[in-house]
Each structure stands twice: as C-alpha cells, then as structure tokens.
Image (cartoon, rainbow, N blue to C red; front, side, top):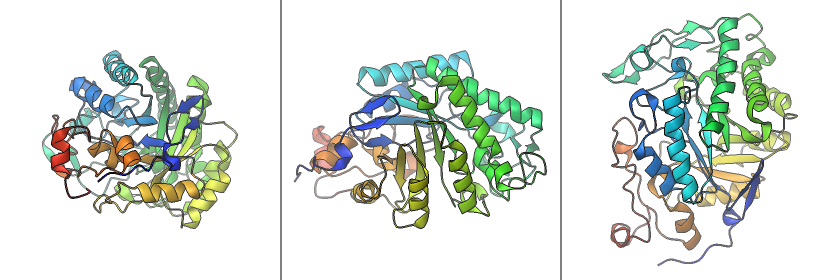
Length: 378
C-alpha cells in the first residue's frame, strides 16, 4: 500500500548555481560502460537518462576529457566531434522530458590500461594501481603509469577546460570535476600516489594545486556557476591513501571558496562524522551530499531516503542518490508516494552492455511492476 509522503524536504525545489531544480534529489554519476565505439554515447544512453529526467538534476557518468584519461572499456568521452554529437542526443532526449544535466569530467590517471585507451596511462608519479583492471580481454594486471611532466600537467588542465566547453556545446548545463574515488585529481592529492618533489608534490598546498588549477580553468572557461567538484575524503577506493585527510580538504575548500562554484559534491556523507560538519561549515556555497549507504552492502529498503533526510537536516542543500536511481527510473515519484522500490540487479551494472539491467527497470505505473514489487520493498 502506498502513502503520500510529499511533505519531505527532498521534494522541495532547490537552487544550484543558475538552476532552479524542481526537487532536491540529484541522480549521482554512475559508470555503466554503455558507450559505443570511440566512446560515443548512443540511443541506449539517451533512453537511460531520459527515463530518469524527473530527478532535480542528472549528473551524467564519468566522461574522459582526453584520450589518455580513459579508465575502462566503453566509457564515454567528450573530446571528439562524434562524442559531442552523441552527448547532444542524450541531453536533447532528457530536455524533451523536462530534465537538466551536468556532465562529470573524469580523468582516470593511473586507473587505466593501454588495452582500453591505446595509450600508456599518466599519473602524478610512476605508482601502479595495486589491483587488476578490466579490459576487453578480461581483467589484466595494472601497468606502471608514466609520471606527468609539468608540461603534461598544463596540457591536462587545458584539456579539462576544453572538455567543459565541449560539454556546454553538447547541451549540458554544467560540469562536475571528479576529484574523488582515486581518479587523477584525487591521485595528486594523496600521499601514496603523489611522490613528486616539484610544485605539484610534497606539502598539502602543493598536492592540491592541480585540482585547484583545473577548477579555476574550467570556471574561467564556462563560468563558476556551471562548475561543480566531487570529493570523497578518506575514501580508499582504487588504492588511495591520503595520509592527511583533514588538512587536504580544509586547504582545498579554502582555496576554492572564493570561486563561486555551483556546488561541492560530498560522496559517502555521514552527518554523524566530524568531517561532514567541518566541510559544511567551511564550504560557503551549495553542498550536494551523497549518503553513505554502506557500499557494497545491499541498497536499503527505502533507497536511502532516511539517510538523505538526515543529511538535509544536518545542513546539506541537495541529495545525490546513485543505485536507487539506477533501479528506479521514477524514483522521485516512488519516494513521494511511498511506493516499493525495484531491486538493483548487480550483475548487469557494468561491463555487460545492452539494455538489460539498464533500461528495462519498470516504473511504478507499469502493471508488471506492481507484480514484481508486490509484498516487498527492494
């Protein structure tokens, strides 16, 4: 039985940069490896995102700003004319359904492989990922990346800025810079992946320099109010060991606070942790919080709603949910009326391609869905 719960702050309109969002629920970026040849988004991706256009904002999946930044197979890019045109089809489809999109710009750094990009990965230092990486031939040992020269760093900053311009050309309202989850910007900030002794390594102020330069360059290129940044303090995914987490994010926020960015996106946020309070108090603008739902534990029965409401009460402005949006294209309406949620079919999330587990999740208005979810909440 459903019940109306629309009084929740989750369904209140929100402001994000120049955007007026119809609700405070954002679809978080989710890597799903569904791009076509050459990293070009196709009809499969257009359908997927259009199905979820009722989100207050969609942040599209991590997309490479240049060829060497590719992480895994079938990851989209935004550095070629064909990729721009492909993304334009996606944003047009979402706009036709009343939705708005940002694009996450993700450079993998050492999280890459020549079998995926055709190029040797680059990183702050020649420190290999300790785990294997997925390639078209299956999982392969990671390679030692080439340490970036200062010239490489400057060129990559310029690539991010051009990728942001390309994203706007493709119809996105803005971009999110991925400085989390062990990707390149995060690698520069962490002690164990940045062994440099030049102006981009050593002290915290030097290790955050690359991320700050990228943020400033992108803000200059498309406007600070079209630019967001995602962080995941103390997250050890992809072998990251930050070493001095509190100082890193205190200095990073201080360095970016005067830019007027559209938002800061805090991944795995927990209002009971002192780090959340420090970041909320230190960040002067909009804070998007992605609740810590215990990954890789199963998704909570409520899709993260209770955790989301705790974060709003603790000072977050907008909430980003990932897996709940993946499995429920009509998540906003389901949460609004208290309808049960679809289960996430984990075996179809990555590396398998096709619409199964991607575009075939039923909506609550679909009679088949009422049978699938009858008597249980996923």
